[in-house]
Length: 203
Image (cartoon, rainbow, N blue to C red; front, side, top):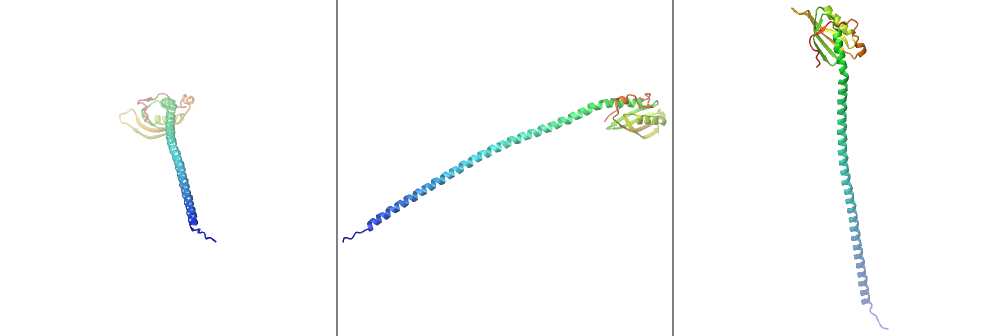
């Protein structure tokens, strides 16, 4: 019976299987490399897209910050205009009060009393003048107390002035918001015989 040597055939088959395995391994490596590269590129594209969105959001935030700043500036300007309008309205509303107050001062002056100065600080009034007697000053204070535009007269000082018209005095009073209709009639005991020698001043 003839004998067949199978070693060369087995070696050839082993080499062939080895080559196929190496080819499969190389193909797997290539596929893995391609897959890794694809994932890397995909992630990079996603990161770039997110960076672009972040940059756009930052620009929009800057725009909104500028708009908010402009709104705050407009609100501040609005408040300044409102404050100015309130001051103007207050001044316009106080003009008739000044007229009525000056008119009332004249009406409360009795005969024999002369004012040398009138000073107003807010609602506080200070009168300086000369009277023929202390009785005239008392009458002036009663007229102030009965006035619709003044109240709470307080005598600070009264003294005789040598060689002068009579006694010099200084008294304080408070301004009140009286009505024009009632103020026009004057105080019950007031007379218009007094004189204001100095112009009434306001601080």
